[in-house]
Image (cartoon, rainbow, N blue to C red; front, side, top):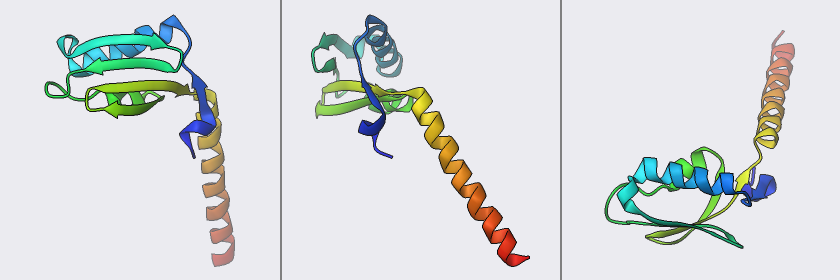
Length: 107
């Protein structure tokens, strides 16, 4: 499952505000220097020496990103939640079918 398959661009003020909140909660407000909306996504400039990088937290809630350097990350989009759920359902259905086939062969 590729992130780019399910990505939507970041384009709302709500996304920018959420990204800022998440990065400040993870790295600490004093370690986030700027969160800037650009045409290519949301740039997050942060301290690379104090506090954890915000990358894992942003990815965990569905944002796609590119690390530019140790103190700069570009949030390029987010993964559509419904698409993720459908993909997860399909994956589980495949597992169920495989187990049912396995059980039928064993019986």
